[in-house]
Image 1: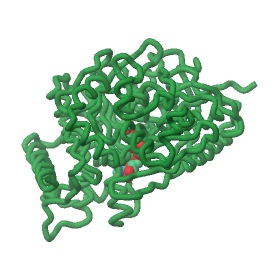
Image 2: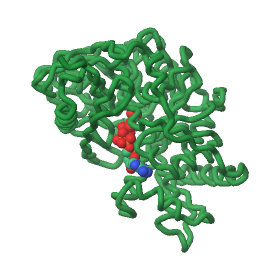
Image 3: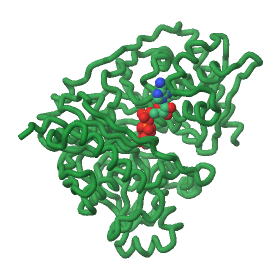
Image 4: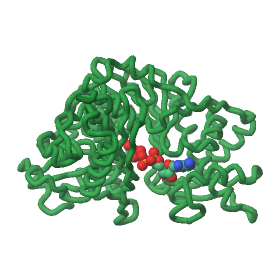
Length: 496
Ligand SMILES: Nc1ncnc2c1ncn2[C@@H]1O[C@H](COP(=O)(O)OP(=O)(O)O)[C@@H](O)[C@H]1O
Ligand SMILES: O=P(O)(O)OC[C@H](O)CO
């Protein structure tokens, strides 16, 4: 019998669905990926078709399993775009509506009402989150109010709620398991991160019947077994984590004070704060980083809604270049005297501003501004926004980290990482595996299935591919960052 030496990781992200087979030492041996169509039904609304997510998951898993041979695979790990909300019928397994994506702003009016009614301090204390339509609670409330019959069916126990991890788990197990993991649960705005349980008062506030909710489990451990009718093989699903927390694990940021930032569609920086759930005075989030056996950690998180999405917009919307990778050489060719600032507030601004009404702008245009300068300003914006987060973390009293570990699609761009090191005035480290999110889910499943002995084994796998040291003169860095702060001030005043 062949040795079971591989873990199949499913990474269901905002723009694509991936399956990657990893060795327990963290080396990727086979990958398959499928792009996920985005649905924009109205201004500020973003949806995904859950059936499309499911069929892409089956397709990429079958492809990877076919390539490596099912007999070599010992466990499955799942990681996912967080907060994105699906309600489905428990009998048929059919979703009652498209998934409402994390970027979707349709819950903003309800959020405004709740803030005005004074609910924010309690919600922040219990969940670590600020009231925003980013989180699942107002998405569930919208579905219950707006899909015909949904409320009554939910009250009768006929419906199930899940983030994408939960929905995939349900489908993979043929409807036998309705569960989620603690890192996804804590992004719903319904979960008390101190008691580590669903909060009855918050469920009442958002009108969510408890029968809708999945069981909450740690990140490593067997959640269920896949049915052969789906991906063609029965395997234990032994780990799950929200994608940003999975990246914390994949980056081996497993000690307090370690920080990673993932540059995909958005950008999410998570600082490990150990056993301490640190409340932020500077509009960052407090979240659960992981629960791996007896290792539990909280994190402080800064969430930026637009990072790689700005590159996509320049490529697909404005058609300024062919490939995301072209932005590296374009940025290098831009004029150094240009002072163009692009504020990518397409769906408002996330941390630390939380301004749903702000909208994007390009400022500082001159007659000689060309494609290269606009592209460079989009890349720079991601770095300035990361500095906004680092400044908020340090104002919260966090000790300055010694380096920032980066990953995600945009971290392939050397120009971005050098500029990031310059603006943060901090070394930036890219690991040899940039698919860190998928790797983190594989590590969870490795621990959950016993294929990986312990957390220390994960820590040993992290290796840098390249380290970017700050080079820019401090005065130049300060001048550029002040220009960004001014640009943000202008668009926020403009919106009001
Ligand atoms: N070389 C690059 N330079 C800049 N941006 C890039 C580069 N490669 C990919 N991207 C951006 O990274 C994003 C894809 O990253 P990924 O981690 O796959 O995202 P997600 O998990 O959100 O779907 C896209 O928005 C793309 O525009
Ligand atoms: O799909 P990503 O990588 O952009 O991540 C989305 C985040 O989980 C949203 O909170």
